[in-house]
Length: 124
Image (tube, rainbow, N blue to C red; front, side, top):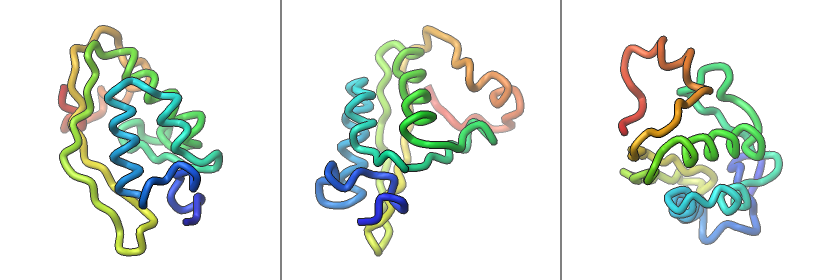
C-alpha cells in the first residue's frame, strides 16, 4: 500500500485502511496520541477542513498537535465513530465522528475559525 496516498504506516496497517482507522479511533478515545502517530507514515498529509488554510500539513506535526489539543482541552474526550468508509482500491478510509466531552480549555487553534462558521462542524 502506498503510504503517500494513505498517510498510514505500512507496518501498522492491520488489514486495510478501514481497520487501521478503527484502531486509530480506539487509540484516540484512549488519549494515546503517540499510538495514533505511530499508525501514520512520516510523509502522511492532513487536510483538517475545520481549521481552514491552517489545517493542511504533515500528520506527524499538525495532526499530532491537533489530536493533543483535543485530548487536553476536553475532560472525558470521546470520539464516537458514526461510520467508516473504505474506497474500492483499499487506499483510503474516511471516518465520520461526533466528538464528545466537557470542554475545560479553549481550543486556541480554532478561535478565528469558530467565529467564521455558519454551521458548527463539531458536536460536544
